[in-house]
Image 1: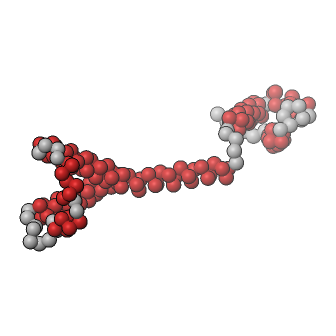
Image 2: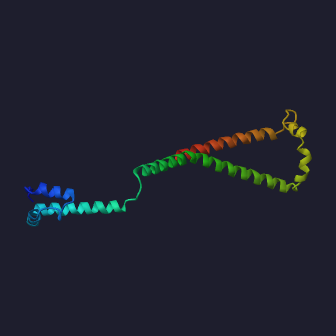
Image 3: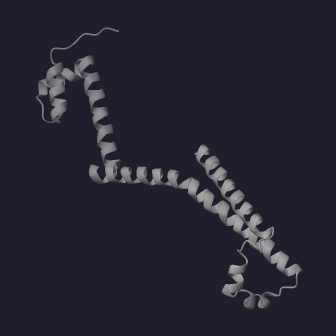
Length: 167
C-alpha cells in the first residue's frame, strides 16, 4: 500500500466540508475524482461519515443539553439518596418485625390467660401505673423490660451496621 497524495485533495476536501459535492463543484473536479483512486476513497469515506452523522443526529432525542444535564444530576442525586436511606429502611423493617413478634407473643399470652382485656381498664389508673415503677414494687419485670430494650437497641445497631457494610 502506498501513501501518495494528490494535488487535488485539498480542493476535494474543501468541497466535501462545505457540502458542495458533487453538484456545487466544477466538472473537472468531478472528472478527476472519477479517475483518481485517492480522491475517490476520500469522497467515499467522507460521505459515509457525513451520512452516519446526519442519521445519528436525526435519531438523537430532542432536548436541550441543559435539560439532559439536569436529568442526569437528578438521577445522580436520587441514587445517592437511595444509598444513604437504605440502612435506615432496613432498620425500620427490623424494628417493625420485632414489634410484630412482641405483639404476637403478648396476644398469645393473653389468649392463654382467658382474654380478660376488659378487666385492665380499672388497673390503668394513673396511681396504679406509677406504682409499677416504684422501687418497693419492682420485681423482675422492670429489670427484664430494661434488659429487653437494651438487647433490642443492640440488635438494631448490629442490623444497621451490617446493612451499611453491604451497600
